[in-house]
Amino acid sequence: MIGRLRIAVLFAVSLTIVLGTDAGAADVEAGRKKAAPCAACHGPDGNATIPGTPSLAGQPVYFTHWQLIKFRDGRRKDPQMSPFAQNLSDTDMADLAAYYEAQQPRPRPPASTDPAKVATGKQLADLHHCSSCHRPGFTGQQQAARLAGQDSDYLLKLLRGFKAKTASDLDGTMTVAAQPLSDEDIQSLVQYLATLGP
Amino acid sequence: MRRIILASLAVAVAVGLALVPLAPAQQAAPPPWKQGQPPSMADSTLAPVAQPPAPTPAGEIPVDKIKVPPGFKASLWAHGINNARVMTWGDKGTLFVSSRVAGNVYAVLDKGSEREVKTIAKGLNLPNGIAFKDGTLYIAEVSRITKMVGIEDKLDNPPTMEVVYDTLPRDLPHGWKYLAFGPDGKLYFNIGAPCNICIPPDTHANISRVNPDGTGFEYVARGVRNSVGFDWHPQTKLLFFTTHARDWMGDDSPSDRLDTAPRKGLNFGFPYCHQGDLLDPEFGKGRTCADYVQPLLKTGPHVAGNGVQFYTGAMFPAEYQNRMFLAQRGSWNRTQKSGYRVMMVTLGSGPVVSKYEVFAEGWLQGDKIWGRPVYTQQMKDGSLLVADDYAGAIYRITYQK
Picture 1 (cartoon, each protein chain N blue to C red):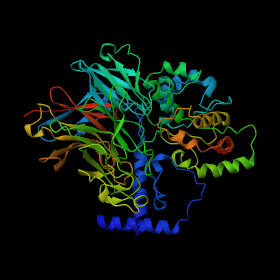
Picture 2 (cartoon, each protein chain N blue to C red; picture 1 turned 60 degrees about the vertical axis):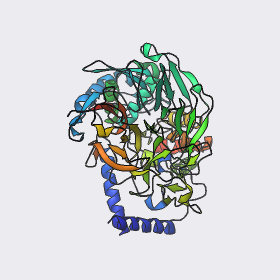
Picture 3 (tube, rainbow over the protein chains, first blue to last red; picture 1 turned 90 degrees about the vertical axis):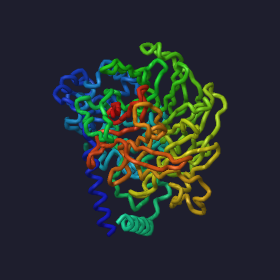
Picture 4 (cartoon, rainbow over the protein chains, first blue to last red; picture 1 turned 90 degrees about the horizontal axis):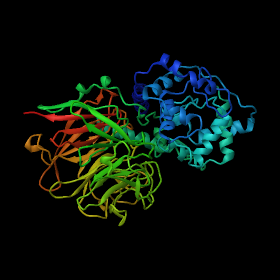
């Protein structure tokens, strides 16, 4: 009885998730052209190589689009991104987000890894429920970013920002999540996430 | 059938509690939306509906799917308003519209056959609450209330946001506010519980009020988990408000509620007693529901009641006078979605509900949603506007004999 109930619940819920990811009409090809100025930093296919610059390949549409909105309205600030986002229309943002989601992410292994920190990072990720929004495997969903294989300098900067309450997140979830983390915890989490295959 | 499901859920909860080892002491808090989830529901993949980053293009909004009573008609009045939420009228006919995660406040100008939308503030911290009085727009973000004086004459060059009151809690979970002027001329707003279920700090889980100059802060109602919609009866001037109930207690409980607060200082039960007759499995121990105000109406589990508005217009049939429209944004913590509709409440003599019925529905088709009705606003001609924060649109409901 309990098992049957649970299966029914799971089935209904997986339907919900699938139907919930509808995006508006966005144009991947238009996004490819519009992404030309982004390539210098984020890579031609959204796989960046510059430390501190995030890869966008395989990021969920909602994630990229919301970040661009926040750069445009000033909630998120960056010397390169803020001026760039000022000139983007809503359609530009939708096209760019669709283009980057369609690109194949490639791993960006950190320059050096500490196996002990990677192991601690995995425990911390479980302890802090990270996969409940970022999904098992940390591939991201909807407005929650793909983290697996992301650049470690970028992840460090962002997590420290959430901890300091200076990084803007959409609804406060990350700011709340980062509060119990020590800087050592943050370093371990980043080592774990950055070494995961995308 | 429902009783069987409830019983099996109860068994599932009991078994879950018995078999699952206690979480290690250093277990960190889950994200706010998942907080309070019992071990028996650990496999659930229910999660809040993600807010689209852009409004739905006008041509893709299936407005013909909105079902209204005979004689009524729903049409698309405005679109392209990202995350459109609370609507309030300026003295000179500007419709001000708030948003939540989009961080914007908009001014919508009625140009006859179409509407012009201007963004008058952006990058704000969940600016859900807006209210207008004597030429001034008041805006409630998470921890402050500000005002724009003379805004209607300066829509293209909005005035500075002057601080009215800025010592509110900074918690983001349930931190966004509804804001409205009461018949006493005071600004009313909610301070939500900073959690799904917890013993909130003494400063939270209430409806509060302050004078428009920022003086005289006081609590009006306590034990209110999160109320993001209220209005006052046009004749009795009584305060009526909706409250979102806690999550992770099953598909069919607890119910959201509609309440009235005839005087200040009443306690509505959170976190001890839900829906007036259901003790919280954790925090209800040693408590009794008799100590708290009973709901005027159980509006349904997980329906997410936001907007509350008494109808006072001249367009709808006479019996619609002083009926209450409740905009229900719709569930996420429920296997079968509920809400996604505008309900109508008819009061009997005194504050008792004589009828609770659907007024407008259709944003939910099967298990698929295309919109979320979140607040209503009456137009001068008596038609009713409905804001949809999912599609970024405003609909207009009219009546013709």
